Image 1 (cartoon, rainbow over the protein chains, first blue to last red):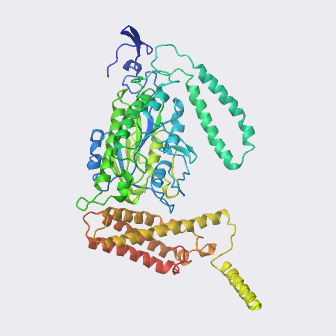
Image 2 (image 1 turned 180 degrees about the vertical axis):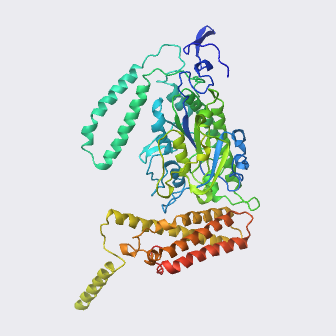
Image 3 (image 1 turned 120 degrees about the vertical axis):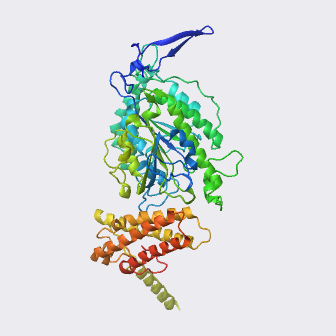
Length: 449
Length: 174
């Protein structure tokens, strides 16, 4: 990395196109960074982000899990599309969801065990916050959005981020909505040419919140225990909103690769048809990448397909989920051919998502290098709703905090080891995580840098 | 006639009352926090034992099937292995019949804990092998069948010593 003369980080490019003046904000140039490009010149580290990426209905046994462990792992047919990212990811195999006698609430128990460390005791239950929320509590307060939730199929039910069963983080449902949320009103261009001025609307919103807070004590004294818990959750959200708004009154730091993209088309079809989901996912991933590069958020949750995976092909008679249960296993091949084709589609999308993050340069590497993205499903062998060995991967080096390019295999350790690892990597001061048989104090230390 | 009808009514009422206060239908009572933990342990192990029962029956059916779903059997065996690992924790001291919650666990479990521990160790070992054999694509049907039988034999051996006789049709811990 070469470093030229120091220039003002507020400097802009000006010009004329067809008689109209245009200005282009400068990205963070090398001159803004330290000598090896790993941090800002004033010593502040580049932000490290955390995200999750979910696909439904797991994998096909015998076609997904690498046969070799360690760094020289192979890529079976359903992971072929991951070849460009073999060095960017870690694959975790043989980790189990231990339900301790709780019923296997299909497509929910496994997913929630992975994300909250606790097996649900009844239908659709959630007894602990999901790990993205815990990590957002740690790192999400320093950016405009505590976290961004995105549902590529455009269904508001497709969210697996929640502080509690009643307090879910609702997803953005289409690229246009996501664009407006990130780059519409309230967006402060970190590389802007003009002098920073706080938005008076934000000052007004803050004052309104302040008035609401004063009503809290009076209201709380009149409520029953359960409602007080709900109100506590509500006021926690309110405090977080207040923090986010306060941040917008501060002048943003300039950031490399932060640019404002063109708005996507307003009217885009949504739904679970493969090509529709892929297109919306790609557009949303590109916008998310820029939102991360512009430090608008440091935590995100992308749902490519829901845990029941309604993904279907145009004109197809059935979808992924139904195929896993109803398709006859091919006697010669030994697997459900159509169901397996959907797994490959999911993995192609996961690979594309990582490519989008990897294409954005940042510091001496890429945006992906400064991310820790957790990709996982809700089940392993969907045909029988197995919650043992659910596929899990991490992508990105978390700013150099972890090593990548390894296939970690255990013989039935609890899935919470992976969740604990990620929380520790992201700076949560936590020494154990999970409940009952899934309580663990043993992170996957092999990947620590 | 009226007297006979009245007598019949009294008899039915008396029998119903007797059934309601029989030894298996204990009256609701308040448990202490410690007792509740033990009662929860009984309920939890009941579910897990049922899961084991279902998985082993599926495996037994699988090995006698002409065209079994080998992958499903591999996952079933892993579930058995997973359950076998923490089994001793399912039996905290005090979670026997003395708690007054219906259970098939005999007091001998805690009276002969070392023997029970050895039985649990044996089950864990055969379950581990079961998962290995069922996950091995090269295992022969005979090897699979033998390992399922060995696992079930381990179950039965422990049950013979430490579980009360199962009353057919009665919903109790297995």
